[in-house]
Image 1 (cartoon, one colour):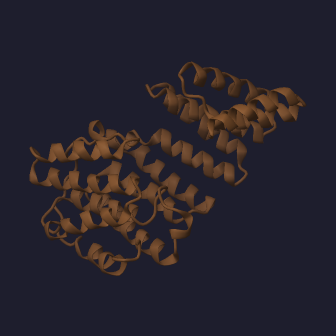
Image 2 (cartoon, rainbow, N blue to C red):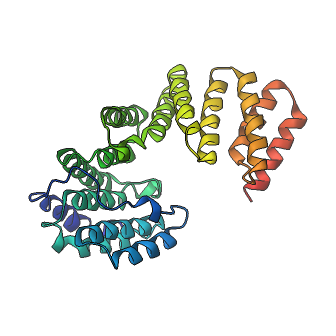
Image 3 (tube, rainbow, N blue to C red):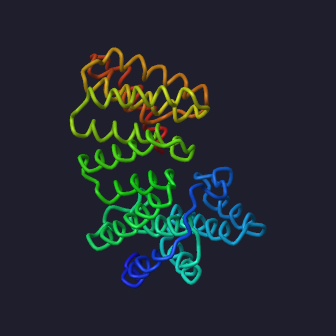
Length: 296
């Protein structure tokens, strides 16, 4: 399914970057329309917004409609929607063209894809799309989309050292930018950089990134994201053999998750490990049982 239109579409992606209207600021605000946990709802919102949108904004919304199909793993439909936009791309704004390239790339390589779909040919097509998106976003000074393209390159180059490189390059864009669409990426990038460092065994450096992520998350209102940030921090404390500190955080996360009605199986996975390392078999078994119940 992924390879059906690969060659033709990849060639067309290259063609549509010659004539671009440079726009230094983002157009329509997509954030209120997105519900990433409900792509079908998001699609309905985007289609409703198209009814009153300008020509360029309608095309931007179309790229997001394609993305909703990618999140539902209907990559063929996502590519079809993007192909239908092709005749209008040469006269469209830079943002439209960047988003078109980004979403095409996401139909090929993203967290939604199964590992066995990521062939060398598919990855090369994705790299081409993300590279073009990056080139155009930089030229148009669309810092948020520049960061997005850089972070998606880590979906192609999945070795930890490569993911660290892309994450650090994206973070440098964020730190140099004054644009809110770029600044909002910092916490996620700190998480990604920390994860790559952890995978590389650089636990002290990873801990620093996760600590900075916590500071950023604490300023926001997303309690779940904040709990995840603390989980990553505690996970790395365990790697550093600071088990008492790690256990205290995971126990707090257990209480907070229960209070929010959102118990996290990963918390119980860590608790089981930490309790076993303390020799507390009863607590370890209780944590394992809770994890198993949540995974049913």
